[in-house]
Amino acid sequence: MKHRISALFIILGLLSNVLPLYSIDDYYNFPKQSYKGSVTYESSRNLCLFSFVAITPDPTKEYLIKGIPSVLISELRNLEYTYVEHPKANVVYHSFGESPVMTLQEKIDAESPNVKRKKKEIANEKDLDDLRSGKKQLAPEKDPRYVKVTIKQIWDKRAPSPDESFGLASKLNCDYIISGSFEVKDNELITKVFLYDDFDGKIIPFDHKTSVIRAYQEMGPLGESIREKLQGKETIAVDISAGGEEGALVYLDGIYLGKTPMVGKKFPIGKRSLFVFKEGFHPYKQEIQLEKGKPFLLDVKLSLKLSNSFITVNANTESDVYLGIQYLGKTPLSRIAIPTGMNRLRISKEGYIDSFRAVDARDNEEVTVDVEMREGKTDIYYKNKQNVFLDHTYKDFATYSLYGSLLFYASYVYLNYASRQAYSAARSDVTLVNASAISSFYRNNPDEFFFWYGVQNSIINDAESKARNLKRIAGTLPMENRKDRQLVAGPMVIMMGLMLVSAATFYYLGLDEETLEFGYIPLNPSSVSYGQTSRESYGYMQFNLRY
Image 1 (cartoon, rainbow, N blue to C red):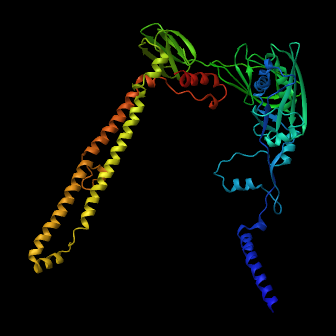
Image 2 (cartoon, rainbow, N blue to C red):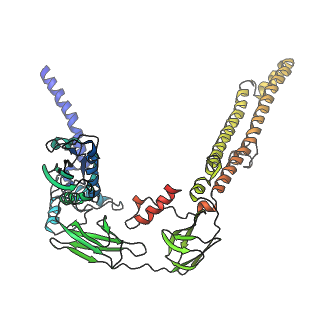
């Protein structure tokens, strides 16, 4: 009997745990759910460069230990992607249910159409096979076979040997390892480099000979060979010219290749996005196809930007005039054609302070600028012109004034609190506040009543006097004046207002014409789009480094 009772309790315990599972299954309707499988592929790989080892130690050649990999980094920094025919699958979502139609992500997107999400072009191995066969073509940033490469410098660890790379790669999270050794013989530098691929488990050796004197300058072919191997796809030579225009910047898939005329630059085959930019010309964009075994030659035609706006510049002394980084000439300038849009004008002369103006050039309109040049040194002037007292600027004093207003506001709040507390403290000492009780007390004890009344009246008068004095010192702000919503002046309110006025005054004094005349503030070069880097880098350095 005991065993039967125990078995009954065990069965009931199991049921109590199983029944919630049925309710969850019913709530989420698991039997009717179905999803197609999908795959998320790797998106980045780490390339680790270690210092090199000197086969024959020589103190005079120790600079090559870190110097050689540093030169290789300069050759490899343009390596944006490595091509992997069969990329690693990071996450695999297996198919679920009967006759699945959509993947889980597609179902989520369908249920929330108003939410914008980045469309996933490759969801499974079948889509990847379509890419390999050429049925589908994607830009490298959407093609999972193009894996982004991040370069890591590891100088603080001993250079590994090829055999040690197998275990070190996973320990340091390195997908590729580059290291090697060097030896100097009769003014000849013999460099041996190995590239370890952790995914394939391969070690690829490289040999290179240069002169010791010009070792860094002659290291280019070695870096080119390593880059071609890391690119993972057959490359062809790309030649780009711009109709005789020199110095135009050339980008392929957002990777900077060089300036026109560009000859013999190697790049992986496939569909590419070409971008050519030069100051004063409209940017050139084109989708191109780099085919196996066919060198790519292209002469692009850049369209000159028409200058439909004009500028006139006058100064009290002959000075050089620059619009952005373009030299316009010496003052006086009369009706000079300039590109439309926002720009920065700089008027400069040796021995005088550079003057800046913001220029908003509009189509078929003329901008006139009159400048009075002042003697002095530009660097010293712009570093110190904002100073009011010693090293304190207008902005500093504006900030101090704001802190002062906060201090007086805190005093205002405290005095109002103390005023209310004066009434609260007196309330406990006033004993009889009921009219019938006071009348009864007067009839029964008339002599004691007058003494009691005097004491009570004195307590009330003292409390009111203290509260009024505190309130008089504090003042009343309009939002706290329930009577007529007017400002009641008091020392704290007055000082608070003076501090705010002082802060606004100092801030206004700091916003004089010379502070504002810089025009627009240049962007950080890393955040601008391709083609603007040259102009924006100059402006960024001018504002943040020089002045």
